[in-house]
Image (tube, rainbow, N blue to C red; front, top):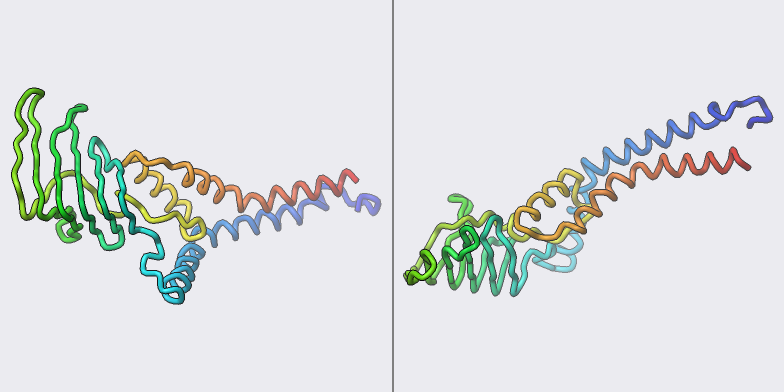
Length: 212
């Protein structure tokens, strides 16, 4: 130690360098291989061993959410994994006034056409205030501004199964549809803080050693 002629910086340098390298390694693993490996382990345990088909919890009942812009959706059943909805109501507003309403028995996401297909329902269009709405039945209807299922109602957030980039993309999607992002923001800060904790703890330890 200092009694032996070692300066504080000479004693601290190796520990600080090692802690910084550890932080960089942890960050690299956290942002590359760790998320995929963790999700694989979740799939094996929850999906295979426990037999939970919806292990990502993307199937919900009685949901209501904003779908971007002035579009709002309610559904009796929503299955984000399959891209299906049952008992669907889609309200589209324009400048604050209701513009159209889709009331369908079911809806399914068509990946090839990149749009929702509504089945067995009624389409109602609203004109200017005071004008009579126009309604028409349909067996199949495509249209509207709804995005893919994953953008409308993402599955549950698995902190260890997503990188910082993935969290930022999730925050962007949720903000676009007007959903809260408190949990996602906390997880984003946590992913920044965890690798830095190695350096912080090293500095705290050095401080105690040098002061005692």
